[in-house]
Image 1: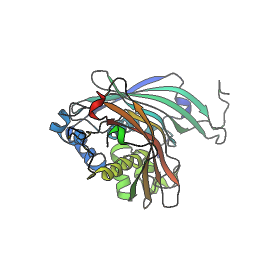
Image 2: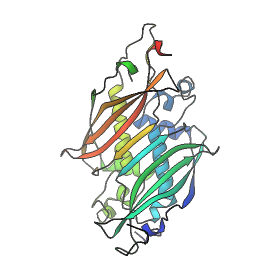
Image 3: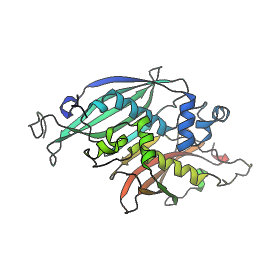
Image 4: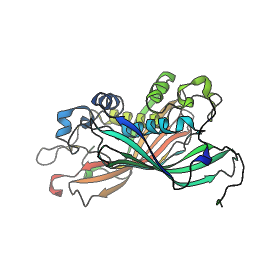
Length: 159
Length: 159
């Protein structure tokens, strides 16, 4: 692996950045749903029109996967990522339809150095995934772990 | 999904077991979460988990796959007019935890237990079912633990 571009220190409290451009296709929606979430409104256009969702739309888990891919391409692959322990909450606020163009807006809402592991820091991001109409289709809140550029260095403003 | 009224808090559904292969771990992660410790077995040895691990989203999507399989073929009860419940989308999930990684060859046993039923003021024909969903590996270690939510249709007299 090459030297990471982003370490824990580079995610600043309150900073918001936008990235990604994912064009959602019918083929991908059906492919994901066929394997993981085979419900009529993710597989069949006619059945989807008659359902509460009103049209063929992506599995919520597919939406999460597309968000993850945009985050990977947007910064994680260039970062000293150490993975994530989970996700506090994801809200599927609007369906993701065929033809939608998605992007991600990331805001750093909390951060702290690890006490037990001086080489690691934790960052809490509020993630919004938006469509081409600027509607928020998904929000995600959770912590992720990153390597520190300066392990164990004193952290300004930290408790 | 059965009728909202017919779902009992505490009801547990065993979803069966799924064995993850290295090829599947890499295929999923190459599309959606291409961090080196999910796609490169050799490089992953020096990574945070000491080897190749499945994306948490893959572990979770497989829970959905097992849930769909468990529901398939189950005949829902019609109401007095002969109508069967449609089953609806999910507003999101809470408290997703991946406490241990999933590695190639691991067999994960999944379950879903109803923990809460919520009536919807905005949609009187529907209710929300909250379930605690868990995945456990062959050593009894938890690899997945989250609170899922699904919309269940109410019997005809509700609206």
